[in-house]
Structure formats: C-alpha cells, structure tokens
Image (tube, rainbow, N blue to C red; front, side):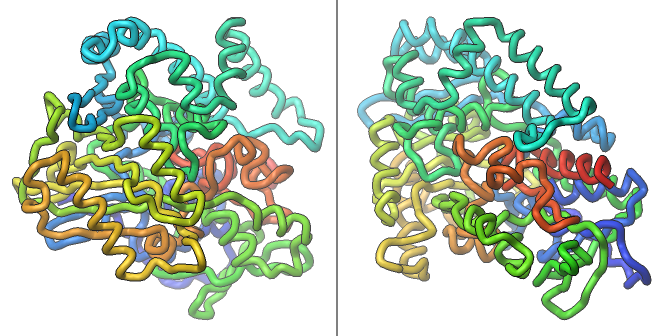
Length: 536
C-alpha cells in the first residue's frame, strides 16, 4: 500500500538556523532542499503530521487512501536538474479530457494522440475534426512560452535589473520572437480572451467545447464567458503533451518523497505537527518564528509557503506593514469555490456513453455537456449560492495506482464547482449543507454511472471550509489566489512584490500565491530560494 513519507523529528538543536521554511508542501520542500544544498542550515515547520501539503496522500476510509488531486503536477526542468530529481520522471497523461453527453447524445473522449482524437470528434463534426490537430498545436506553442516564463522570476518593474537578471529575459524574448509573427499576435490575442470566444472561434460542437472548457475554469470562481479564462486553460497546459492535462508518476506522492530525501541529505531539519503562530520581527527585520505551543526558533530568513493572506495578515504583526500594502493583500481574490468528494467503491461501474470507460477515468471526465450548462453552474456562485447543478469532474486514481485501495476496490474523486466559501446572507458550511452537496454530487454521478450509488462504501465531503481547516488555505482556495490576469507574474501576490521578497527584511513568500502559481511543482520554492541566495 502506498504510504506518504513522514518527517523525522530531530531533537532540539542549540543555536540559530540560517532559514526557517513554513510548510512542507512541494514548494516548501524544494526551497528547503535548495537552501540546504547551498550550505544553509534550514528548519522546515509543518502543521500536519505528514509532509506533502496538498499533495500528501491521506486515509479517508478503512483501506482507502487518496490525494486531493490525481494530477501529480508538472515538474519544471530547472527544478529537476537543480535538485537532481531526474529519477522521478513522469509519463504524460494519455487522455486530454472526456465529457458525458446530456442523455440525447453520446459522450466524447479526447486522446492525447491528435489523430485518434480527431477520429472521435468526427462523429460530432467533420469540420471540428479537421481543425483539432491545429488547435492542439497552437495550445502547445502558447503554453510552451508560458513554460519558459514560469522558470524565471518575474521582472521587477520598479527597479533596474542587473545584467545577470537581464540575460534570462533576453532568452525569453528570443523564445517569444521564435513563435513567429502570427503566433506572437495569437498569444497576445488569446491570453485575455474568454473560453467562450476562443472555442467559438475554432469549433461548432457543443460537446467538444465543453470538454476543452473544463480545464479553463479549474480553481477559479469564473465561468467560460469570463475574460482571461483562456489564460487559465493555458496555465494548466504548461508542460503538458498534446493538450493532455496531468502527469503520471510511480506514486501520487513520488515527488514529495524525492524532494524530502534531497532536503534530508542536505541536513535540513523537520518539525511536524507544529503550527507557526507568529513570524517574529525586530527593527523591521525577521528574527524567527513562534509556534502555537510557545516554542521559538530563530533565523534571519523566514520563507513562508502558506497563502499570502494567512502569512502577511495572520502571522506578521501589522505594526511592521504599510497600511496600503495590507489593503492590497486583503484584496487578493482567493474566492475558494471548489468542493471535493472522495468515494470508496467496492467496484467500479462503467460510465454510460463512453466507449472505454476505464481509459477515460484515468483522466478527468466532465459531467457538464455544454458551455451554457457550465456558465449556469457559475451563475449561482456569483450570488453566494451553491450551484443546484454544479460542474463536476471525476477521476479514478486507483486505475493508475491500485495500491490506494484494497484489491478490486476503487477510489473516485469528484471536484464540484461552484460551491463558494462565502455563502449568501452569512450562511455557514454546516453538516446539513455539506451533506446536501454530497447528495447532489452523488446523484449526478449516479445518472452517468448506473449502479454507482450501490457501489459506495464510504463518502468524504470536503467543502471549502473543510479545505481551509484541513489544509490551511484561506477561504478554501487551493490556488492561494485565483490565476486571473491581474494576479500573475509581478502582480502575484500583489503588484510590486512579485519577486518573493516581502516588505519585512528577511521574509519571503514562496507558495502557490507567488509566481508561477499552482500546479507547478516547486516552482515558486525554487525561484524564491535562488533569490534568497542571490541577495544573501
């Protein structure tokens, strides 16, 4: 059975650390390992008993374990080379996406093989089948530019850059020009577009549009008609092969184990089951952290991989922060609106309307058959309501990793949007409302998987409130802040502070709330560590 690596607990060591890292998720582990390799003495403080953050695998029923997401994430080549993690190579997913029809028409599974996908599309539209390979090629070019961008720190628009910092940007400029005039213009045109406009430009089949659009609303409280959702789609395709979201590794927590091993090999200390209550500051500079149990650890550098709001408005005494900066942090759009339901199944029913149900369920299967239905699901959240017919994506990680359940059993993970953290009129996510959502999700899956309800042995519902409590993410926002155009690059987390260093000397932000954002394994942790080593 798969096990999540747990941290050793060293005995208290006299003296101070060179750096303290808050959080042992992928970014925290990478930052600690990078600093450790550079000879710094590092302590990682993690509130959970296990390492991994959002990527840890946890028990949710007797004999059943699961991660939050079956996508093991994209590992940037710079991080893999820098930490020597090439041994945890990943296999690209072989399914782009699947969508189930409305009952009057069949479903659609898009293979990562463009020719096979075009053959599947041909039954819906011969015109769309001809255009699909070109569409996938374009997405690959545009997301490929973002891939290069995501391996560099964002430029500091307020100060002059050194020659050393300019060199990578010159290379990025060359890559941009290499797109060619047509694709350069297409990149600038597509980034601010809505998914509706982009997909209407290319295709006529509602089912095909729905299959693609599901990847562009992931983790945001926006619908396919919202501007910038085409960028969100490209963000989730960074590092992907042939438009297929997701990567397969030998275990869902393989990266966590490998990064932790590198950190330990470089004498990084871990303290788990310990919550940071305050970041200690003296004379405008960090001096360490105070834990909830009263213990204190000193260091001139603190690297937080918690979300920006939790870090800056929850752990730092406001006396050390400028009111305008605090106001900007308070305005970060977190807007958690995703709930998760994890099911333990004694058998795996087939999905109706899909030719190869098991193959489809290794990737995301959307239950939303049109852009209109996806937009209606979003409409409710705008007014603080849980969608009566939410957008649901399901996947079965045990088809990749059978050890997550006892032999013959399966785990099914359902993502439900939109279930806003902040409900109308101050309503709260109590047990009744949580169970109602669970029933809505269960019934929706049952409609497309005959016999599903009878196969359930256990169900765990994780509302945005539960995600906040269990994973320490403000408003249940697993993204640490929506990937909207006003919250990326040098504007992430807020404009003017996109290069990881915060207003308090020695304090750095290195979680998903910093560039390049969620879904990039160790991306922010690696870039933040390089900035720290450059400055200190």
